[in-house]
Length: 209
Image (cartoon, rainbow, N blue to C red; front, side):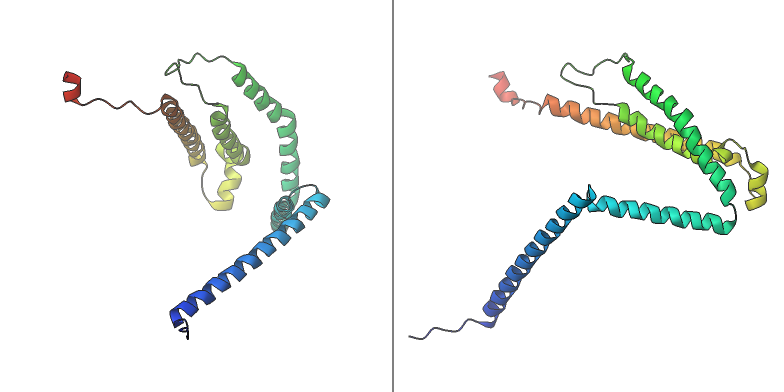
C-alpha cells in the first residue's frame, strides 16, 4: 500500500513552520544571552546598562554644546552665567520652592467631597509639573522675558522683546489649565469607578404589576 506524497502547499507549510520554530529557538537563545550579559554588566556597573548609555548621551550633548559655545567665542560669559545660575539655583531658588512645596502640601484646603465614597486623588503633582515647567522656562529665558537685554538682543537679531512676557504667561496658563483638566477627568473617572455600574431599571410593565 503506497502513501501519496504531500502536496506542494503542505510541504511549504511544513517548511514554514520549521523555519518559524528554528527562528523562535534562536531568538530565545539570543534573549537569554543578552539577559546574561545585561545582568553581568549591571553587577559590575551598579545600575542598568541603559543608564550608562543615557549618561554618555548626555555628556556627548553637553560636549557638543560646549564646542559650539567655544566656537562662537562667548565661553567666558557662558561660564559665568552657568556658574552663577547653578549657585543661585542651589542656594536661593531650591530652598524657596522646596519650602513652598512643603507649605502647599501641609495646608488644609477646604474642599467639599463630590460624594461619600469618593477619595481625592493626590493633586500635588498636577501643580508641581506645570509650575516646574513654567519656572524652567523663566530660568532659561528670563533676560528676554524680563526685558533685561533689549539692546543686545536687538543688535543681534533685529527684533524686540515685547512678545516674550505675554507668551510666557500664555504658556504658563495653558500648562496649569491642561493640568487642571487632566486632574478633573481622572477624578471623575475614579469617582465613576468606585460607584460602579448603575442598576438596570425594570421595564414599565413590570413596575405596574
